[in-house]
Structures are given as structure tokens and as C-alpha cells.
Length: 525
Image (cartoon, rainbow, N blue to C red; front, side, top):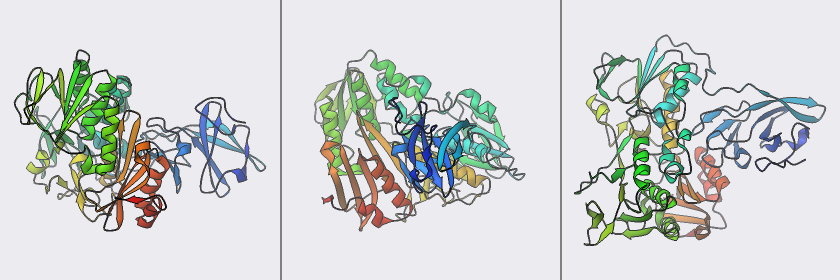
């Protein structure tokens, strides 16, 4: 029997299905009432978990099974098929799980069970040596680390210090649905304030750390306060690059990095008609899309010939440009901004653009001064080893500041992706309490441009060949970036399963498996 609810499909699992209908290395998608449910099987054992991702509600039944986990097709969160636990970001909460009732060869889903709460201790740990962990930074990496410490059963003190006056929040949404007016502010915090109290995480907000004293293991705050630590995680993130031109400090000029920044842009946009976005970065173009959604006219000024060409290549970058132009955005490429005035932006060719609001998105710089002053090794970021530990024992770094050894390219890389930061925070947390877990995660990010979503797995700073499967212009394609015969990264549109398969193959270092995703449909350029 199929469900009539639009969010569920497949058989009613409370009525039962034959055991043999559940694939050994896959999943059977069904429902219990109005809840989507996935059945998985390991030999004669059967497990039932919720079918909706706890990140943004993606349909897990359309995802990919890898080992004992299922991966969300939208943003690649992973869940344990046996317990429902969220095993890797961006999801932080587990999915529900249900009892299994066996009636001969028939498998029925019974009552819902208590969740394996992803925010309570699930491991038994009591590390006497490590009594205090301090986390500097309350963004993606810092918050994920604090939560993972408690999930791993760490019972000592956790202090997390953030510059924002808000609790940790969903940063990607600041330039996407929230800025566009499609997501209410109550969706933005990752957790309510009481969460941190309930899990004994001391969250110190609106506070900067001024100094790290390595020998006495102390961090000192700008207000004169301090905290001792046995382990320290630096997750200070990055700051927007400030544009050094006249008028960049005017009241109607904005950067976008924090929740306060996004609120300020929204407030200004309510009384504006014309916007100029300086910079053709992902953030800049997402801001352009969001402001168009609010009804503003938008001009984008960027020095490149093709927006996003450095990351996505000419073909996909040109498609993104056309997608924006279709929505009414005007591009001024090969141009730079010379000055900003109260009602206009002056360009280097002598032309001007009217502007009630200006948003600058020309990149970010890692916030490394604290680490540098503490004597940590620095190389365009904070240098860490494969365990995310810095040059000083007991001090770790994660997120935008961390330059780590990439096992696939053989290079040291620093990656500014939200999901990478979260997963690094989770790995660093486990390593701070005794694990020796190498960070080998395949990088992933997504970017939204109106109804078009681009998913990108891997990391390619340069390439000598581009493979294209499908049709970019139709928004149904995969683009592979190959260097020396190896596809290092894959960008996709409308091919969620393909993106997941590429990620899984890269995890296995199975480069031929990545190539096979393009076999028969590829065109070289």
C-alpha cells in the first residue's frame, strides 16, 4: 500500500514486508503513518530509521548507502543505518528509529524507540588527564567540536568563546534563504541557548581572546578574564577582505560574514531599490540572488572574465552567469570598483552604477594572529598534522584557519567550507580526548543560485582537463576537474546520487571509480 501523504512513499511498513524484499547492501523506503522510514538489513538483522535528514529535511531514501550508513542527497550528512546516529556533519541530530517485529518471514515496524541522542554521551569516557578543554571560536568547527566531545562521553569542562553575541548559527543560510526572505530567523540558531547549559558547555559570547599563554596553558580574554586548558582548539574562522577604496566605510556599504551582517543587509534592503555587489565570489553571487528575490535591481562588478571560473571552470561559470542574467542581474566583468559614493559606485573605466546598498564580497582572510602570536607554525594558515594538531602539543586547529595535509593531492591545503569546518571540529574533538584519527574527509560544499543548486566534492586548485557528463545548460550535469589523469573534484547539478558516488569513490582513493561516472557521456574541453 502506498501513502497518500506527499512526503512519504512505498509500503506501509507497520503492515509488514517480506524479509527478502529488503536488500542486503541497500535500503527499502516506506513509511509508518506520515513518517518516511528506511529499512536496512545486515544478514538476518533488520533496522528501521527515519527517512528525513535532520539537517534540512532531505529525503534519505534518495541518498546512497555506504557501509552501515546512509548519506543525504542534498548536503551529504551521514546517518548510521542501525542506530540513526548522525555520524558526520552537517546534520547534528540523529534520525528516529523504530522497533522491528518479526512474524515468520514478514518484517513489521513497531513502536518508535528512544533516539540515540546525538548530543548526549554515547561512549563511556572518563579522562582524568584532560579536565578542561577550551575552544576559541563558536562557528562551525567550534560548535561541532563541543557537541562531539559530549557525544563521545567526555565529562570534563568545556569552554567555548565566540566573538558573536549570538549562539552558534547556520552560517550558510545567511547568504541564502535567510537573506532572500525565505527562512525565518528562528531557523538560524543551531541550538537554543539552553542546550549549552543542559550539556554543561560554557558558552561565552561577544568576547575575544587576546592571548594564548602556552606554558601555563591559559587563554586570556580582552576583558581581562582567563581560562586554563588541558587541550585547546583554535577555530577562529576568517574575516572578510576589506576593500581599500574611498567610500568603503560608508553606512550603506556592507560585508557579509555574521548574523549581524545579514540582519543589517536585510534592514537596508527593505528601503532600497538598487544594489551593487562588488565581487563575483560564491557569497557575492548568492547575495545577488537573494537581493533579486527581494525585488532589488542588482549589478555585479568583478575583475574576472567569467564569474567563479577559478573554482568551477569556464563552462560551469558561464552557466552560473547566464542563470543570474536570466533573473535580471547585470554583470560588469573585467571591471573593478574605484570608489563608492553615497548614491553610486564608480568603476575603473569611468562609468558609474547607481546604488542604494553596496555589498562587498571579495574573499576572506583566516584569523591567525592569535595563533601566530602564540608561536604556532604558520603558513598562510595554522599548520596542523593529519590529526589536526598544531606544532605545539595539545593545541589543535580546525576550520578556515587550518592548513592540513590532503592525502589525495599530496599538498597542504586550507579549505573554507562550512561542512569541512564542522567535520574537522568533530575529528579534532575525538583526537583531543585520545583518539588518533586522521582527517581524510573528502571536502564538500554547496551553493544555491535561485532554483539551481551546485554540489562540489573534492578539491582542485588547478586542472589540465575538464570532463562533462550531461548538459550544463539544462542544469543536469557533472563536471570533473582532472589533473595528471586524476579527477580531483566533481561539481554537479541535478545529479545528487552521482555527487554522492563521486565522494564515496574519492574516499576509497578509487580514481577509476570517479572516471566511470563520466564514461560514455564525457566531452573533453
